[in-house]
Image (cartoon, rainbow, N blue to C red; front, side, top):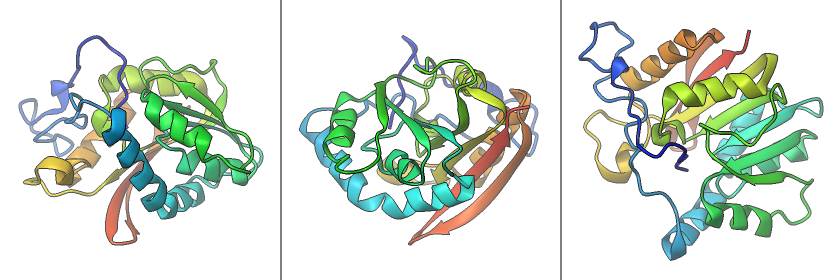
Length: 226
């Protein structure tokens, strides 16, 4: 989901190949789809329904990677129709799902069914509607490439995490020459670049993993708030 927060797109070119040639640079910034128009209307509704059906396996995988349990307070940034948020709630966690698209929040509430309660909130990564130090886990699943401002987003993630809290960013692996919907994700360089940005933002224990999920491969960047 696209997380809209600032009046203007902020594609952080400090992390492009125009800088210092480090291995962590990327030909395109990690938020290379910051100008994506987002989800709304009938198109947004249909997209959300597809996500509901297709995203369950990935949600379970993310919950396993984060080791979510009943002791956790989870913030799902760009929660979409709520697969991952509801999965965390089923595991006993207290969960806040945040998304900028009203249609996604309506779907999340509609299909909550008999799941444990989740707090669904309208918001963006740059201005999370979450108190300071509230979360033990924050994740952003297939959304960082839509963030308007990566620097501001990482600062907000740090703000809402407790000391020792975990942050996970998950993106589909894509080819460098991919276009259209096939380009929504990260190349190897972009995954490395985002890990470098997390370190620069002050996160500890930053690591990158490549995980198989069905017929797709996903990048997982994990970090810890000191």
